[in-house]
Image (cartoon, rainbow, N blue to C red; front, top):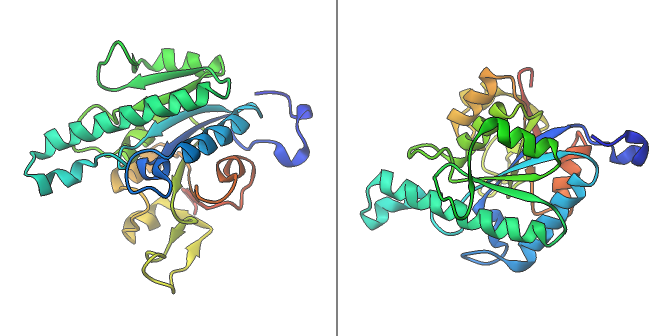
Length: 249
């Protein structure tokens, strides 16, 4: 990481290496489907601002703006086949994000859990860590490469494998709430909460497999609202942004 003397005191990052889980829905902006040009440019600019203060960044892309595995039931598609379709959607998003980031001057590497030699590198842990050490942005796509696992679980798995300091999940709400804040105006936000509470209360902020994996490896999770200006950047430098999920809560 760059020396803190290069920063304003308010801009010193809390973490050296992060994994950012970026949902497909976050990329579509106000559109009902696909990728919003303005939104992906804004996200790329925010990621660059985090990179510029010396943080090593890996990103896990979702695919819900194109296709989600769970939707296969409505089409009569086998669940495993539908999940593979969802993985391909995450690769589309990964390619788009790679292009947007490189237009800002960043060096990136697209990694796929499915073998697509002409587009992306395979996941090799030591190679990925070396990319990060060379200040390249790493984009993980295709989830875990296996059906029946969400991209939340892929993000937790990759974060543990590359020894990230935290898993950041960008969502459409301000953090973890007692109930769905979209449908329940009485929902209260947690500033801090433990892994066990999230699991016991069955809070649907991310899937239970991902939470359990983070709990087993003592990897903190921060949930924050991507729709608020500069919140990717702010989540790295400010403790009060979003909700922190940790051992002690």
